[in-house]
Image (tube, rainbow, N blue to C red; front, side, top):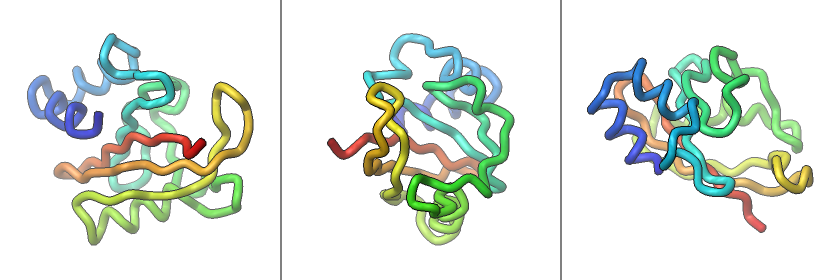
Length: 119
């Protein structure tokens, strides 16, 4: 899902790709798996599950354990081109707080991630 999003960004350009991902077009959401795209300042540029997240800065947002997980994600991106990132987040289906892991890749000035809940 992450590589697919990066390939799409390169193929059609950022503006169209972000609209496609955020617009929930077929192929961009699979159950609870979807891509999210951030710039390196923590601004959400595309969100496959919740369009209301786009345009917001998430640097100060904490997970259920109190960790500023997006800030942590931005720090990891400074030294890794791809990485796994663990945090705790509310499952949109069950509303329970669950451990979640996201796979992230950097591409130019972007950080593209997709995460799964550890059930």
